[in-house]
Image (cartoon, rainbow, N blue to C red):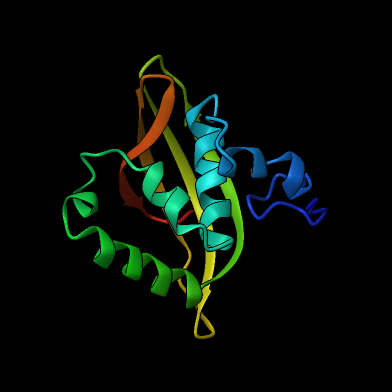
Length: 138
């Protein structure tokens, strides 16, 4: 099925030629594209993709996997994903950072946030390792 609506990652490209390929198994070639595809996966409730693209060292992954999956599902069902802004991308061979602002609403309340995320390359796949919340730019 071809989906022509714009991708939730805010690229302005249709989903089917943007993040859909990563959600279908093609590894993201860099950490910024992985970040964008993870945001789109949250918006599309693709929980397995979020888990698959998380580094094994991620604390949440070391807990009960089924509980983590349920927590993620509860979060995405309660959240409206209004857009993503990439503020900075620092590429590297095996480590990269992406600073982004995620525009989110929950129960009519703005819960948007800015985070500097660290990604590590394991084999030929970039994985989300950790994130540090930042003060939101005005």
